[in-house]
Image (tube, rainbow, N blue to C red; front, side, top):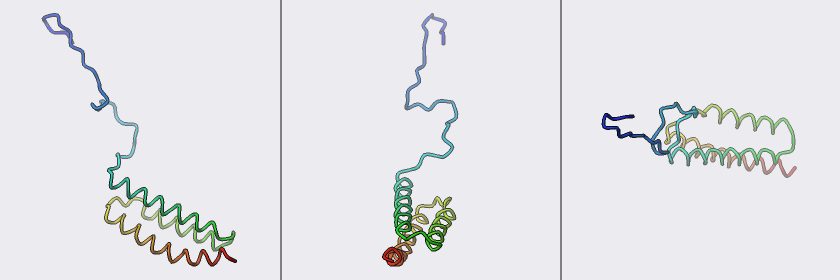
Length: 108
């Protein structure tokens, strides 16, 4: 930009100043609470899958994996923190009761 007195002013873009270009990210950035709950959900999913794969290959193993996947997919778009916490706690309760069955099946 040129001023009438002959002094030129340049503007610099810093990383803290958002650019005018649209973001390539499609999802909004997660807050800390949502991030922590997301990590808990992922940890629960991994624990369930690890436990299921201890069962010898059978129809029961496939049914249990499909049931777990359907439950996670059904609640995929829940964004309210209290609802997420509730779902994680009930999921852990269901998983604990399922774990006894899985351990029994794995011993066979």
